[in-house]
Image 1 (cartoon, helix red, strand yellow):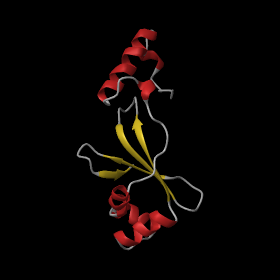
Image 2 (tube, rainbow, N blue to C red; image 1 turned 180 degrees about the vertical axis):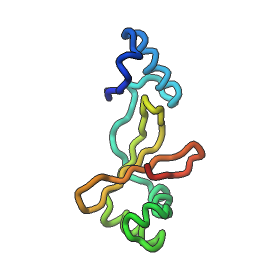
Image 3 (tube, rainbow, N blue to C red; image 1 turned 90 degrees about the vertical axis):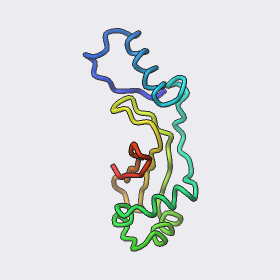
Amino acid sequence: MRAYVIAAETIKDQAMFDEYRNKVATSCGISKLTSMDTKPKELTPAEKKEIAAMIDVQEMWGAESDAEMLELLDNSVYAVKFDFVSGSPGYCGDLFTLHGDALGEPVTVIRDQSGALKVI
């Protein structure tokens, strides 16, 4: 199970902590946080197209079109998806990690409340 960072002063006892974890799980549509799937997944063709269409992502890789970015995603970008569940600030949903062929910080993409992708 993944650890959740919660301010120590807010947790009075184990029961309070368990209640908090269950509320997070319920809000994410899962029965328990222990049922989290933390394994990376391959992007679907539709997800690759959606990411390739993001202007911010194209600019980071120097792509001049959706098609060029899609080719980069297929050939030189390490890209995975996680079904992410966060206890704080409370995000549940797709989390994409994109990493180029140079060492450095990866790019993280999530969905906003409307379902649109955004770089964080």
